[in-house]
Amino acid sequence: MLNNKDLREAHLITRGNVDGLVCAALFLRHDPLCRVSFVTSPSAASSVLSKDRHSREVYVVDLAPDECLFSHCEGRDVTIVDHHPLRCPPKGRASMVIDEGRSAASVLAGHLGSEDAFDPLIAIADSVEFMETPLMEEVWSEYGVKRMVREAKVLDFSWRANIKDDVFRYRAALRLSQATWPSDVPIIWRRFLTVQNERRWPRAVSLVKDRMRRIGDIGVLELNGRDSLFGFGTRALVHVAQKQDLGYAALMHRREGHTSISLRGLRPDGLDLGAFTDDFTRRHGISGGGHPNSAGARIPQTSSYRLIRELLALSNP
Ligand SMILES: [Mn+2]
Image (cartoon, rainbow, N blue to C red; front, side, top):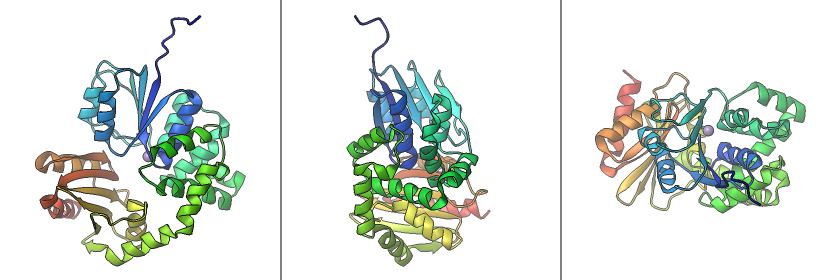
């Protein structure tokens, strides 16, 4: 007979990159029946949250909560987990778990109390987020740098084979929730091989090298319509911009009626890009926000270069 325990599902809302995949694996380990949604922005997280009226509890992980997200937490059991400082004061009764200097997966693992068997996956998330943590050093020396770099690459390439495929993400995370190595999961391995064999990373890097414009301290890459970086988007742009010692990278994608823009800060003392995009889109539309060194916005096409000019002015006062 069923007791009166609350049997509704728990719901994880996170990103679809390596950090998010490891978060999903940890959460599925904690609650194998949970629901998982992968999103790309705080506003997409708000929209998923607003449509979910049935989950017992919701975790929003790695999504730089803004006012809109907090307003959707009202009257809900929501836990917000992030690895960047909060920009917007929490409203309502959402629980906050914020810690800096490690991946969101690492913060979530600490909160859920994950087993040691997940240390390699958490260390992989730290490394892909460019956070050299003590755990990462420990795992790298235990299993060897070569193996760990390879495993991180396998997982990072795999989801880029088809960036829209959330069914793949869920199935991959479910397998990783058994504390498996990425290369031992057939669906992950196959996708990795596809990306590797098609030489998508070197092709993305050479396309960026050909087309990136240097505007002051900013590396700007503009893509139109169906142009793509073979799934590597900002990662390839950041790679090239860093080599050229630039302070910021901006990927602009012109779509019908608007421009999507992703900004990355490449120096620790740079401008707070989350605050910048939030302020810019408040004045010019449409929506935007994010973390201090990683933010995104949807803006009217006519404002694209105004955003770059304002960023340039603020970063060179
Ligand atoms: Mn992250």
